[in-house]
Length: 390
Image (cartoon, rainbow, N blue to C red):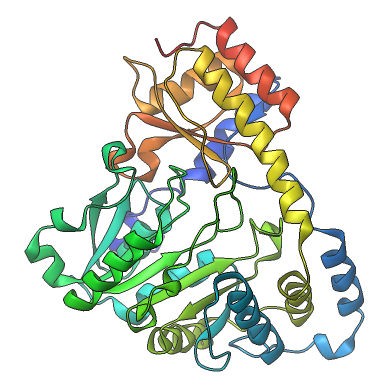
């Protein structure tokens, strides 16, 4: 058998693939699983978007290869949405590119910028693709701690000067997966100034901007004056419009970075099915009152989980964005041990924090992807099985 590459040998199985195997084994044993693992919305894609897709599929002009960088109409829709949502001006021809989901775009960015030995500043805890993309391109991930005492924001001044000098890209993700932390424009202003001073490309992952509560409105880094000089931002229709399976997103901002990403993508993919792009245009250019309705559902679920965890002795406050709850494991547990305990004793799937980086150890993540009755049942199962945080 042909030997796999050295870089392949350094890549563990994807976090959620392993969780899916554990879940499947438990179901096979007859366990009634409450799945609070992967962040996949359980609500359907908005009907008006699906209706547009039905019509677009029947149009033969959509059946051929799409433009690599996205149709002009989709890129214009993205620019229009950014203007309406963030008051950010984007040139659809040079500052916008379509993505087959933002995960794809994030992973391909490394191939445009990272040479063997280059350093990438990776948030810890953080979305696993940031680390894996670095390894796949023979770069070196340097973990930037996101700590509770800093509201899970990176301390830029604490990054060693020799690391900053060698770094080429820094990833930031707010509203944050997995911690649900949020950032304000003051943080982005400091980050942009720091990136300009140190000649570092900021890759902002804004996938959860529309999933917010209690009046909070998430900003874009591109709202900061001069941000396009140093920042490329990744966004997705997955969470905002319940379109995870559709695989459609966008990267916007710095035109050199957008062009570099386009060069990589044109060599390895053929773009998004044009009918899906038409559905995306519907999502981005029409009023979306459905988002508020979905957020109300998640807020109700959030309140059930937060009050439930508080009843189990955990000092935790309501999140203001995303549909994740990031919580410390009870004393005496590692992240992996607690996740196994939850599955084996309670039939509940949650995600171990250490899967998101070293600073994730001692935490676990809950996704609010089950209805209120099931979330209440999850809390009751925890109580009945003696799990508490006192």
